Image (cartoon, rainbow, N blue to C red; front, side, top):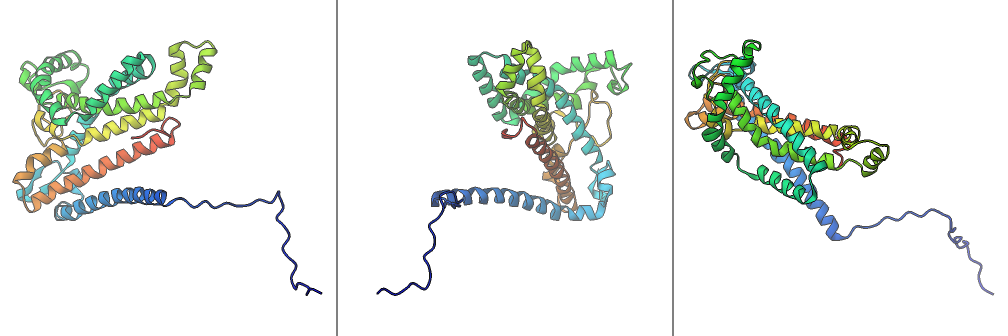
Length: 334
């Protein structure tokens, strides 16, 4: 007679019982994820180290100037006077002029490429836009200095003569001589607009192309015209991407160096007359003074770099946030 079992065998699993499966990723996937994660963290670490380096090297000048560094508009290292106010204003002024020129052109180009251009022409225009983004900034700088500036002198004089009596900021001191209009913030801004144009166009074109096909077809089926469909579907869908593209262009314009360096006539006074000769910007100021500075003067230049670094980082971060939070930017790469 067989011995009785002390414990009854477990009942068979029910067919409707929920079972959890924990897949184990293959080794190659784990290696890839680890490499990508390391690269992402390394990028943040490098940016943090750059900011820390600028902060440590800028401390001697910041200890001397304190908060006056952001409010003082004079740069006299020999008497320990460091002020970035006029430089910051010139940087913003040139960037805003660049956006005023580039945004309408980029918006129209992106809309034409994504909505109106034939398929064969669309590929060509996309390629040309990408190539424009790959052109070195020094090429745009030489174009702006040798060709654009001479052609914009008459335009600047026309704007001053026509709108100066109504808009005081368009007036110049000696309106009869063309030399009063050379090396101005207006000319530098127009040249910088050529640099930021491909970036803004690419972002806008991508978000326009991501508008849902079902909503496009629904608008057409309800009797909307081509422009009506664009106005009611494409533009609302791409609003976040449009704003993000503009902010990315602003960040690019704020940090432009060589284009502004070759065109402007440096000065350290606040100028509210963009058509008049003379302005300044942070990045060209660093490039101009770096070879002749040492000690506290060099620390002041690194403090300028710290201000520009934080400013552009803030704007680019805000642009990425705006794009990622919008419907159109969910799958957009910037």
